[in-house]
Length: 310
Ligand code: OXD
Image (cartoon, rainbow, N blue to C red; front, side, top):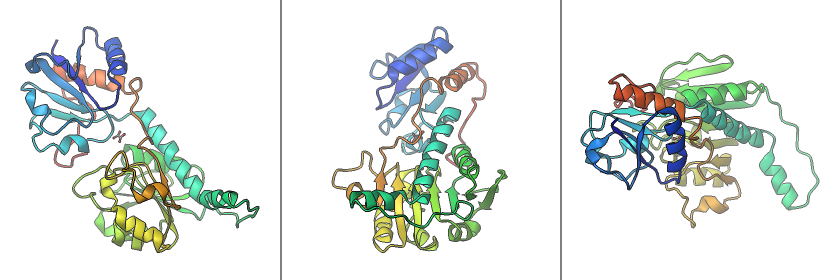
């Protein structure tokens, strides 16, 4: 059997070796740096490998991301042309992401930051009770993750809309599509949740111009990719009061540098890229199926279109 290469900066090789060995009898699983002869490797399971790394495998047939995002693969200028590019589409991760988005929406909706501040000042004071049905939540990106987050938030009675490249039909979620409908989507959004894949089109999308199109006092949540948000523009919008608060799980540089102003900003909550972590148990079935398919010369599932890059 051809070899499966594994490389990730996270210490998860033994968990993946175990879960794939249970599903692919006789698998030749090679965790970097023990790769043996690179010519044996036909399937690579990777997360954030250095640029140029994958071109050393002359017989590679598929490159599978160890996450839902594949931007780390397309960022390699020497990416070999030809292998299938595959992402994880894991219901467990979809649920985890929907929980995280819901947590941020509820925290802002129920004035969490204001009450946390009152507690710090030992002030017993009630604020006007918020109304769920008129709180407008906007999900940027209605792929597998965005659609589940939108449905989960809508189930609680929020007024939910989503923006995506093409029109989507999701019960209780108003669909806005394409660049022409972005402004109308932003104008009706009190809590903006970024869940877009990183592509050349979405890089720097959340900038000063976009923040200005949100209503005054809107909140910004991002668990898409850090490079979609212009951090200085968000800081300026927070400091002017136009944006009332932000919860961020992804950053342009990760880990977030120690001197970054987000760490100590009173209206920013920092999360260390944990909204939906890859799970070697729940993700292994589809990876095993793809190893089987690729080695049999069949088309894999969850293949990414290299032109769209998601
Ligand atoms: C992913 C991530 O892409 O965790 O899955 O960022």
